[in-house]
Every structure is written in structure tokens, then in C-alpha cells.
Length: 220
Image (tube, rainbow, N blue to C red; front, top):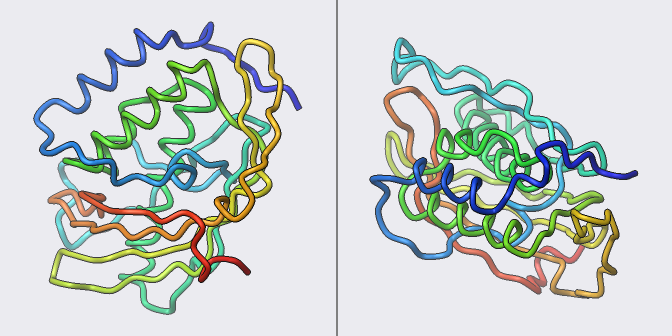
């Protein structure tokens, strides 16, 4: 299926301006974003517009739908833990992943990324998006996310870990719509860990993280 490059190929310069404005005031700049978990492929997950200031820290509003390009899909498994609070963390982490993927595959709503990421994670996410834009690339196919787990490290702090399988996703040349072969082999399997913090609007934002490609624990 051919992707609709609706924003006249959302020029890298225009996109950069939007992302840089969104990152103003962020701290740090380490690359703590997954190469394909944040810029992977995505089944319409959940999206929330900028949270209402009336949402207190005890209130969590489920994200609204985030739509990627028609030929891109993220599939999230293990989304229900049985613990409502952990499920909130997972929902916001999935929204963060899809927010980044929406920008990469459609060029739309770059401001949405800063709803779910801040500090080092926001800067890393923006850099990841711009790397795609600068290369004139997007992606298509399916990325699977699984073994999602949450560990609380404080009242408003949590660690999220998960695996990503990118073996059914391919880089896509935006100008031509041509798909590049995926010959990454074991590097398609990624293990990721993110530190998230709940903000005053009740959103669990990623603030830092790391990822490992070729992760044996994810090869299943």
C-alpha cells in the first residue's frame, strides 16, 4: 500500500522548527529512544491531546487514538496487567511510541510527542524523527511490541521494559514510495527500558531510557 505523503513531504526544515520549539526547556540529550520502537510501525494505539490542566495527579485519562500512515502498524501485546495503575503506564508508553511514529509516517502533529516525553527522552525522540526526515525516509509494515512490564520505583516513577520485533517492517523512500529490504537479521529484535514519571496532568512521560538491538530475550 502506498503511503499518502500528505504534507508535501513535510520538509525537514519545517519539521525541525516544530520539533525544536517543542523541545525548548528540555534537559540533556542522550539518545534513549529505540530505533524502531519509537519509530517503528503502528497499529492505531491511543492518543491524548495536550492534557487538560483540570486533570489532577489522581486522574488518568486514557489516550485518544493515534493514527499512523495506512501502511504502517504497531501491534501491542500484553497490554493488560491486571493492575489499573500499571496499565496506565503502558498506555502512555504506547501512545509515546505511536506519537513518534505518526510524525515519521505522516509528518503530522509533532507537538504530540512532548505530551508523552520530556527531557532527554524528548530530545532523543526528536532527533530520531529528524534523522528519518533528513534522509527522506519513512517506514511501512508491522512492528510487534511484547513482554511489556512495569515496575514502580516511586509514587510517581516507574520503569517500563518491553521487546520489539521489527522483522516485518521496512524503511520507505517517501518521494517514490519504494520499500527497502529488511536485512537486519537478529538486529530486528530490540529490548528497551524507559524511566517514566507521572506529571501534574496525570500523564506518564518518558524522561530517559536505553535500548539494545540483537536482544536474545526478545527472539521469540
